[in-house]
Image (tube, rainbow over the protein chains, first blue to last red):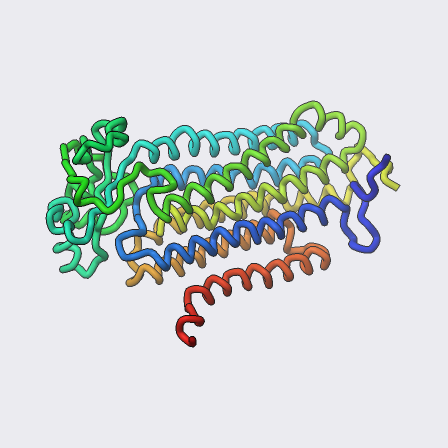
Length: 292
Length: 111
């Protein structure tokens, strides 16, 4: 059975059917990500002072991944343009680079960014115990400068397995973040572009003084639950795009090109529209989670 | 109907697409520049956190506009697509207004 209007435009819409289909799908995607961003706004505005973390993500790595995704948006549109100009060899090159960019984005996220977070630990100190940990929080200094209070101490825990030991009375850090090691250093007032190295320092926190403690998992805070959910869903979209691109980069694409090059060009245009949308979502994710 | 195909590019189409290739590269460069600008501006103190958010979102919206207009060809698209997007924009705005409505908590304020 021949599917109609895969190449030529339907007379009433003026568009081939797949284009209508992808735009309807993208409209539903706007509502999906819109709902999540709206939840982000709700959680962020509702967060108590000091409970919305800043500067916990690696900005240079995030900037690099943003550049990679933008580059892939350029190469996918060049792949489509090559097909329109009937330059199949060029199409293979541009599409190959697009696939490599998408893979690089996912590799950075899944093998570096996320695992680095899973080994970081944070303790939120109870309000009544904040003064006891003043050397690590620097709230008197922050108050004098009219900056928001700190309530969390973060760093590397000495023994991750000990976290499951309910009889332990303390949390022991083997190294803490620079912001807690030097809380009154003006460099700690605002997040810095380059991540500051952890300071090796044994810090013992009484569990009785702790409101809540967690590795940087989604349960750590509303911030990290929003971060992992949105970047995770975005990552799945990248993976979906890569599967489609790889499919058309393999001999399937060459065979379709031999049968009807315009049909392949249309398919790549539709897949490209999805890819640009994925890039567009990241354009908002990057400043919201990494910079602000 | 659907079996019309050729390996030779339609001359007008090929010329039209070729003309746009340089534009795609320039927009790509502009987007990379705007990414660097976003990062730079996030370290500039605009007085309040709210002001910094407004500036960053303004740059992000400009970037998103470039992607949509040039890469997604919305600059010159058919009315059917614009109609879809108009309805989507209305519903997405409604979604964010619902969030604002929830935060203003009109029920406990009035009853």
